[in-house]
Length: 284
Image (cartoon, rainbow, N blue to C red):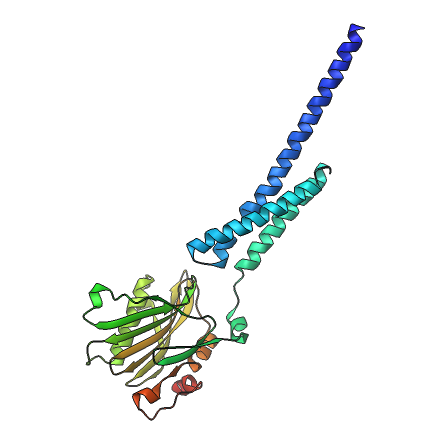
């Protein structure tokens, strides 16, 4: 009789151990399915914005979404065999990775040229751009307060390449626009730690009030293109820059961008007429 009792106790213990092992295995799979998509999708913020605050917000939103998807997959496969759980986990990783890949895919310049651009006027220059430029600062550095009485910097806050608009008023009346342009270009090139000796310049047009040119230099072994346009009217000095940081602009993009720049010639009282084709005329 005792042997029968011992046998029952042994069976009961084995049943509890098996049930505990199954519970532990289910918990492990549940953790894997929920944690992996959370970790992967939290990187979405880095692909959507350069603003650190918004990166945290996006990381929370996409991380939470990943957790919900993982929980759903875990619930649906809790009574399935190990093969089904492995398949579900691989699918979660694939889907999460695909989402990050799609978010990180950058539009080519050919794609951007087909989009509708935004018309914007800052100071005395009207121009079109794929994204609106926002004011970043109006502070004049101490080292150049002798030169500028006003300085406003606008940008699209790009991380790989950036569009800048510098709106200034100068305190001296002996500055030539050629010297102003070369000085501004040299300062920007210096800020991205590129030697001016590596810069090749292709001038599109220059006169006493306008300069436009394309320039190129090497970044990480690749030759990239940038562009600058400057306009001077009395003590007003304004310029637009397409500046590569990690990647450049195609020549087609630069040429199209230039044709969309319209200075306010009438404000200066010259005989020039602004039009969307002025850029092409400057190069001809």
